[in-house]
Length: 388
Image (tube, rainbow, N blue to C red):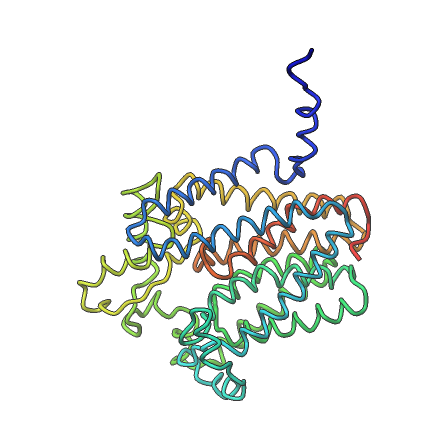
């Protein structure tokens, strides 16, 4: 009698079969992130706050895994892409009505924002935003999604109804980004958008580049000396206008904290309160409220330690490169637009992360993880030349 029946063991792989995007070192990166997230929760001096942030972090990871695991055909990819478009439209519309715009930076936009209806305060308090959504954080999420939709529009990879929805969503996004005054998002989108246009038709990219230069020249000549420094540089060059630290001060404190705890970080989501205790004894910053380190790499290292940061950045770069390779292999087909757009969107997200950041523990983090998952799953498009 065979006491060890190996047949059930041989079938285990059918239950734990993983797509390529969840194998090898990519799986290892996710595992490192998960482990370091738990470590960040355990070492945090703000356990209650970190528990809430860890839940958002876990939801983001789960979103990535579920999305990649669920996309096993071009048709499934198309359905997942439809979800992104609908969610992007809803998020943009909600943000447009629920943001507290920083009109003090550029008073003329108040003539526009005052006509925009505002969501009831009770709705915003229900999601933890007492004074309105943070325009910079929303702009960072939109910076990751806008190139994706632009890619499918340029390559005509959608049916008429979806194409219309993508155009409407793009228009809403552009309008919101204009009102947000998020210079980080503007700069982050400049190269990816021009690159997308250039990939599609070189003269489209050249035209966009010329228009950008012309627009900058006009802005420099039209904007008054009062508004120009405030709009373009703000706390970087004129900190006396703002009761907040400059980027340099924030980054220096963040680096000091990382040097003190490089392996574990300071605790997931705990940087804001720790930073406040460091600068509260300085009268100029007594009432400062800095939500994050204003840099993707620094913030990730603070939340999940240097190992977690390296795993996160490596994953972002890997899926971006993967999307570019897929797009090149699909050149001339409608599916190329989705792959190019995803690569451009993640590139914009990384550029945005040099001055601002949508943290691993932000409420919007699951949506960013969804975009990352679509890029990771983009090789499935090679099975078909259509994403409809």
